[in-house]
Image (cartoon, rainbow, N blue to C red; front, side, top):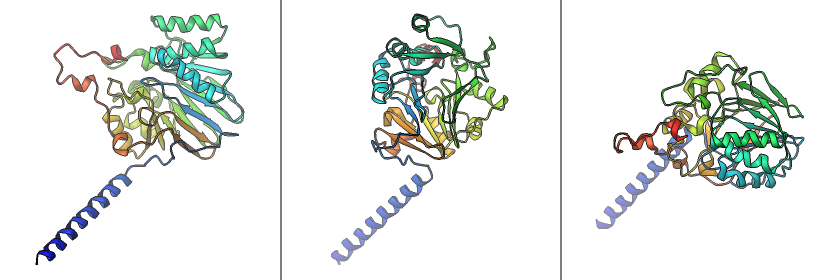
Amino acid sequence: MRTLKVLVAVVLVLALAAGVLYWLRRKHSQTPLPTATPSAPFVTQGRLQIYALDVGQGDSLLIISPTGKTVLIDGGNVQAGEAVIAALQRHGVKTIDLAVASHPHADHIGGLRRVLERVPVKNLLDSGQSFASTEYERLLRVTRDKRIKLINAKRGLNFDLEAGVRLDAFHPQGDGKWLTDVRSGGSVENANSVVLRLSYGAFSMLFTGDAEAETEAALLKARFPLQAQVLKVGHHGSRYATSGRFLETVAPQTAVISCGNDNRYAHPAQATLDRLRKARIAVFRTDLSGELAIISDGKQFDVFPTRATDLAALWLGRMGVDEMALVLPKGARKTEQERD
């Protein structure tokens, strides 16, 4: 009798375990998973290469066309400058055809200024905003000293990267016309980030800087061809960016979030991750996966993370000062504009 009871208990435990396993598999299958193998070898010759560099809490993206034309979008903060230069060397980049300062905040241009000092750069595409900061002044100074051609971004500009690769500017509008109606605590600099669309055959990727919902609304109103297979998520995954309507229009298969694992800004926000998950978009994060390589032959594309990512961590937003405000003394909270 005792043996029978033990046998029944074992069967029940196995049945329960099988049920839990089935539920987990069913739940995880509802969300697209990153399928690339970490550190897997990949072919780059004759292909478009895009690297989301791991610069901590900041942005830096490197584009290498099939013929070797190079674009560097942002460079993280000052401390990330050496890491960006090392990445350029690792990927065989000796000259940058086009550097892009998406907007004048230090976590995007600090490291970029270091690159301009050390690596030959032909052109710098800047948002063209007036912004009083020491780091931005240094960037403009080195641009003049190195005789780098300065181009102010405006919608309609395009850059031929050869082999059918094209980079189109959608924002800011340019000619002194700025988006100034932003949310309370928001940033005019973020709202006027340079927004670019990279296209190569059937492949495209949208780069959004730190643009948030106001910029997304302006892009939608202007009826730009926003559809892209890959989206560089705006403002490091801030809850104020990547609106549902914007996601529906861009309709990306994959989203890339550049953020730091020690950031205190709640980037990426749980609300943003939830919107991406609901839209069944595969998500990659530099804070978890390190540098990301996106390789395309103009028909298909693959994403190669440096490190494997736990699925539970992938969809878990970070706790930042906005959430901590619930337990902080009144007045201890800073606005997002002051923080980032």
